[in-house]
Amino acid sequence: MTTRTLVAGGAGFLGSHLCERLLADGHRVYCLDNESSGRAGNVEHLLSADRFEYVRGDVRDLPELPDVDEVYNLASRASPTDFDDHPVEIALTNAEGTRNLLDYCVDRDATFLFASTSEVYGDPEVHPQPESYNGNVNVRGVRGCYDESKRFGEALVVAYERQYGVDARTARIFNTYGPRMRPDDGRVVPTFVRQALAGDDLTVYGDGSQTRSFCYVDDEVAGLRALMDEPTASGAVVNLGNDREITIREFAETVIDVLGDDNDIVYEPLPEDDPQRRRPDSSRARDLLGWTPEIGLEEGLRRTGEFFAEAEPNV
Image (cartoon, rainbow, N blue to C red; front, side, top):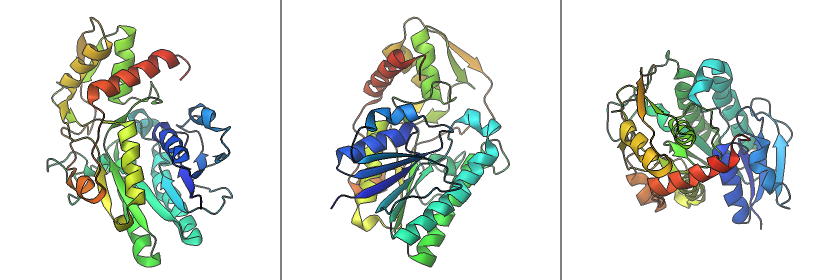
């Protein structure tokens, strides 16, 4: 029997890759997106597939949807540039939208996967970050609309598990990158890649000593699929990210080596609440799911650069 799967936020960067993988795995896929940050063009190549349906709609006011077996909730703006411009939308998408999808899962007896984020750890005082760490989030800071609403979304997931017996899993996603990222979304990978390809200087905020751990999108999708499919993962929260930690300055140098030419690095003041260190403790993903990332940073950057070089200025 074909598994019927709803991907909320399915026309976004990560969601579109997940839709592709689900179709390849034989699922019937319903892609729900309001195109606030996703783009219909990301899934245009899937529209001719018999087992794919695109639904224009918003998780804050769910349209009529068919019965499904699984729901992936990836619906939310995640760009730092959106935190200033769309904070209420972001907060309500992760609160009201998550509640609506959980109610939908109760009605359909569907399994739910909530795409949370490493941002729930805030500017962490524990390093690397295990799932047991409760985080250090500034609820009143500019990132609070995203960080805290994701934390609230996780709390809703746990409440629905306890009160209604929903089979739910939570993925804390760390710095995913790859083709179909919006070049203007403010995150470091598309910014650096775009600057390198254009021959511009790469803009590093602060002194570049802050660290991140970057996971290529194909690896992230494999982790999401493994978490949804693991029978013993009901109720689990799992970090999904690459545990190779790199400073932003070193990352800029790597981007120049892979995609640039004679680009220089320039420094600007650090934004408010920018985390200083970020690396997942990946032991639970390895032990529970048998999942580890496979695509190295240099290879991932090459693939991402190829997409940006071909797609701009139409992305």
